[in-house]
Amino acid sequence: MKKPYLVGITGGSGSGKTYFLSRLMKSINPNDVCLISQDNYYRPREEQPIDDNGVSNFDTPQSIDHKQFSEDIQALCEGKTIYKEEYTFNNPNVVPKQLIFEPKPIIIVEGLFVFYHKTISDLLDLKLFVEATDPVKIKRRIMRDNKERGYDLEDVLYRYVMHVSPAYERYVRPYKENTDIIVPNNHNCDIALEVVINHLKKKLPILSKDTNTTLKTKS
Image (cartoon, rainbow, N blue to C red):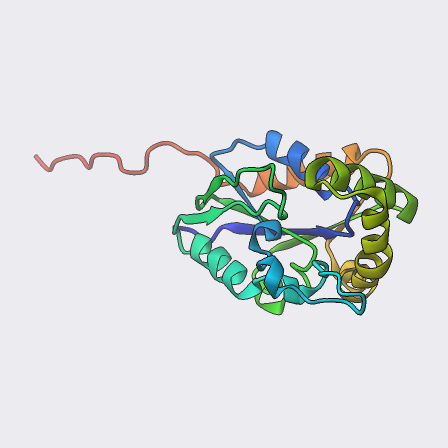
């Protein structure tokens, strides 16, 4: 198996990574791409760092089992299939799914700290940084955390100010200038998305006629 082309995607919480990835995945043949997200490698709540007010902080590199994450990415590169239980962000109303990650020509690695962890960053062939302004990110975070994770407004704002914003400044934003493509995503990301899609399609193996043609028998 040829080494897959690894794409790393990061950006602040609420920058629109999920939206960008959703459209990207719909634009590429599913037989050609695998998406593996850092979100499914969070450590259990009881292992999360605690802030000064006794609140679990899920926005630190230590919140992620990056060793297992990097090992699974490496296994995909070696042609192995990975099985992983979905992480549901401690939402009791969501039944976790059994996720299957299969090796494909393109592997997309997504998450807040994929550039911060060197064992993961060093594997990447292309790095994308999705960005948006703070007001846009806060609005998206409030809507997402209320709908998908059951957090109330006070909880969302507390976590954003105390956890999310400091983590972004320390562990995410410093890597922005070393990325290959910056995706502005305050309103839409159509142009950047088109550029990335075209680039990835050019990287896909070119289908050719069957190379295992039968050799002519000597007469």
